[in-house]
Length: 136
Image (cartoon, rainbow, N blue to C red; front, side):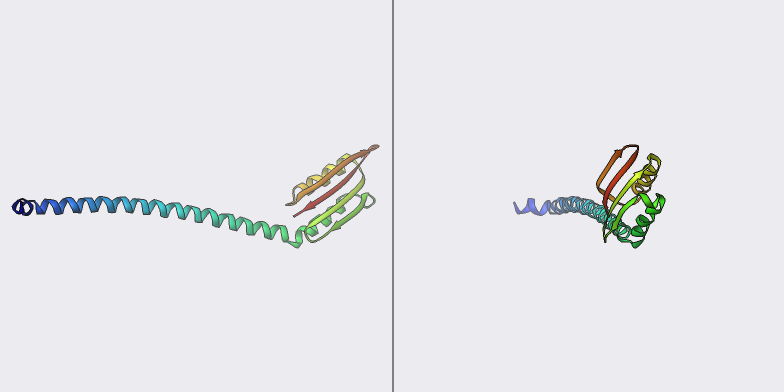
């Protein structure tokens, strides 16, 4: 028996080394796939963080408050019943608006990065009344 073992010692070493080689290749393939997945997750997370930061800058900018305040100038001053702008929300009440004025005002407001929390438009006679609460 010892003679047979000594006779095939080189072949046994080659077979064991091939098994280790195949195991190493499988492990390396798994490690590379894991690295690519984690890199893709990291890239996606960094994009989301950058987008969140840019939206925070946009929503917290004082320029947004100024733009909303300047919207009051697009309608007649007698139509502006109240326009209260707080830190992160605005309450706007307009009365006696024509359809064109209402459409223009809402088009400009909708083009801004605001979220409408409440929008109430009523037709009173031939004029419109609008009450809007929006936040950012």
